[in-house]
Image (cartoon, rainbow, N blue to C red):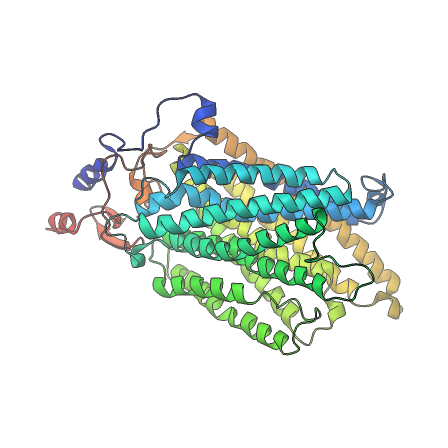
Length: 564
């Protein structure tokens, strides 16, 4: 390993390189006004961390409101418009979690930080646009949060402006990601050699270009209806027109594909981590990449799946349902790839690996409930709000959150030069894992009870009492699970300033380029040395010089020399 270490030391020697060094400045200029892709990624991650705790607090308020008993006499009943306030609270919670957590954290936070490092680039293609996107995202968060406290009409106008602002930021970032991946790859980094995380960020960026442009256009036309009297979506009360349906179609064109914008980066992160901690290559890696492409394409094409009663062509539901069914093929292959990677492996059960396995558990559980929701024999009355909410949170909200946490535990040493505490991390994992199931599985039961028509047979009182007990249990489980997140917050803050410093640059023995520079990476990432890539990112189980992997930039002549 002496020769390997000397070779890798070249990566961080010398000056940072042309255009990469930033002069020493105070915090305001260095962090808030920086255009460095690593700083932009951290800003997005801190924004997502704030949003997730705010969103969890709002979800607990909603759960208290839904719990029969004293909950209805508290926060919401102070106003005669309690139902309007509750609807606004749901909108705020959904906006925070979908936009600023599930979209911002895995795609913009981790993506901005690690995409250039993993492809051997010194910076994003458009650094100034990177900074513009994060500040537009911050402005959008501020506007959406303030809209909750305004009157309904003013609040909805501000929400639409903020959603348009977020859409512009997402479009800027998506363009930046696409150009960086296509144009700034280092020598030897061919498309087949890209880590699967880079593939997931690139596919998500392409999908974002398509769907956020639609959301932006819809918000602009909606605002023009409100402020300058156009009639794109709004029509006189007495008029008979199908124009209002146009808004539904445009919204679902965005919303259905947004699910895959949130989950696709998580697929890439989990595939990457399963390989690293199983010490095995990704099973059928190229087919996994093709499956990611197919999931993105299919997810984009099923926007009409939830619009069966909105006036579409009578044959359209069949077409969209067939497209939705075809989505299961690439998704099933991804699942097979994950289990194939784990097969006959000796996994290292680090906290990052546990959260990756937790992602698999929740994703499969949510997929199983999705089979029931998509069953054509299910009566429409059986598809209740609680059932849909439980399914949606399992397959997207909780599963994606576990993937984000897995990525944070994995890359925290690279970002800050310190490790998160593994004992606290595992304790936090088990409390969150059990708590999430205690919240969302009973929500499925509540939904089934609500759909059973309790007033039609003698057991009405018993079923109603069971519903109340389940609501109370879910509220208690939500409070306990939210409280458990304070363990992660304490672990994060303590490790940030007092955590264990790295004894080596590559504590996880990963093969991708980011692990062979200093932690945190210097300005310009690779100094005046340009890395050359000779192989893919998942050469594990290859014994060489006391290690069990081959780094991407290890030259073949070094392997031959050492082997001889």
